[in-house]
Amino acid sequence: MKPSWTGQGKGTPFFKAVLDEVEKDSESCLRLSVATFNRRAIRLYSQMGFEADQAFYSGPDKFITMVREATGKKE
Image (cartoon, rainbow, N blue to C red; front, side, top):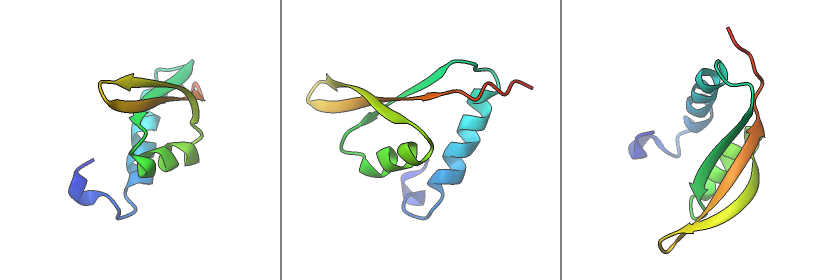
């Protein structure tokens, strides 16, 4: 999402649209990685059913992997 659009309540519908597309072809676990400093994204992903799984570093930055079961709604 464009940085200028953040903080305007557009994250939930945007991410929901992304998940709808991904889940069309997925029947397994969904996994994403997010930098731990990105608290707004982590809150959004949590609200959408993702749970923190593992932490790792990439250079000096810490990330977490978040997972959620796919709904498996193939068309």
